[in-house]
Image 1 (spheres, one colour):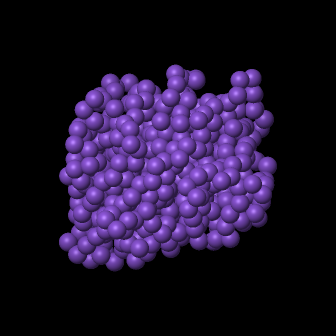
Image 2 (spheres, rainbow, N blue to C red; image 1 turned 120 degrees about the vertical axis):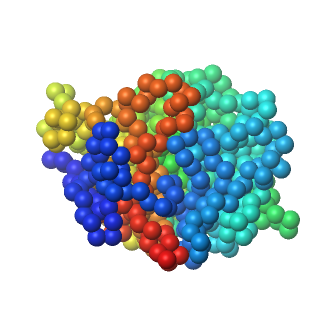
Length: 479
């Protein structure tokens, strides 16, 4: 019976806290754990020298004005809004830049930095930008990705329509990252889906700066992405080829769900050269099912197909760096944890929001919201949402779920978690804890206070989690 063993969490370098992190209602993290870090509470990225870079954010889901870097004087904010105004003269506001969509900094092998940004313009439409720094984040330039602006999506589907590839463990990013944009084209297909055109481009460094080739259509039936929580990379690049994972709308009458594909984009040929359906996402036509992809040290591609309160499914390519050579049959990774009158003694798996990386030892890691009921003592066995972690060593089965965070109350919760791995193999997890009772606030207040109880956790050994410390951000942070 898979009860979910808690991972050890420590508040400081030596102070142990009973696992998992069990949050108390109406008690802040400082009062409960003494947690009030000086480092920024967002997902970090590290360059080849181990220097950290973090996008600015607050409790507002939209606002972000720059990238934080660290030096001898501590953390410093270097703004990019002046560059945005230069590239988009009718710029009005940043959209979902405070962690809800675009929140990754992507260091390239040559030392340059990139970060995506979606902005609103004067007519209410949106522009998608790729920002670039050639001086370790001190100054920035901005380049538009699409030639035309995009319509704003419906409010309840507004969880992201732009994403860039980020480091997942073995994809060496040698230049600007593969960049994807979803453009809505039709009326809603379901409560959680709208038909989209999915585009990809691979920018490159020209003589006078960033060059963005005309984006190529990957799919004309794509579901929207969901970058608000989970935030897995939608692609991995090996050499000139980028491998893109995406979902399409289910065909009428097809009960298997929404088909999930992996496509190969060849940057030299500037086109999609291969495509393979590898499975189906359920429930059908639900953007919460957004999948993630990573590559291991041998070049095998790994995909975890998401779900919205159901079971994730895992598939692996049969040959390294190949989409068409075949894939393993998708298998569920969790078959327990939620028990009621309709289930067996172990219950069934209920997972949402894929966060996927591959560590230095080729162990896969998935962090997700897990609905649990009747399998432990929290909340008297009532339904609650934990933040949980599973891993899979090469050639082994997926582990039992390990609880990372238990919320202050039962019922609805969203952690808006983002997972990263650095070049030393450490896992970094940025998360919040937003309760269902807080959903009752108006949308205006909601957008300004979405990220409650923010924290960053670190896992050094692939199993045990602790609160991040200043030392985790490099030697400069220790001084």
